Length: 152
Length: 85
Image (tube, rainbow over all chains, first blue to last red; front, side):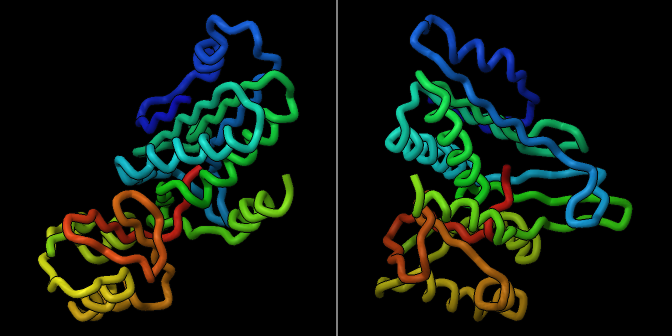
């Protein structure tokens, strides 16, 4: 299991190769990459700044992977989340899950993202020509997380 | 008892505090009680911690609710609902 919070960009190819290294039992790799959009809730975005809680954020991400591991038959998982100042089209977050079969990896990857969005301590601040503002949490993200407690 | 407090995002900016060490009486202290103590510091503290805005709390890096009990030496944090990903 790997969890990293960093200002630097990431390379999905490098990360996938590392997870696959020396393993021949992996049958599926599912990944998710989140990007900065130049438009959010009708406002243009020229810059995004991400803050986090050093210590708690890493623990929270590790706990989310543990939950996914206890729920699906996955081999390994990685989360890389960027912080600091980002521009539109920059990569923000990467989740990769490996498993023997695709079903477990697909579900676990989506579960990790849904929990990350609602549980992991990160906060976004958007800036454009009109000024800057903190991004409000969305109830749709809570709904996305909550469906995991009723289905498997 | 002594605790260490952290504030993040909008709370940090508005309260103009990132962290502080706090000495408190040794009676039972919950998150809710701590919020009401801090709210007495003035308008903006009340608005941020006891107002309409949602505030989440953590004790020693675990998310907790208002009823959670704080102990001597704990690290307590207040922050808005999270918006990562």
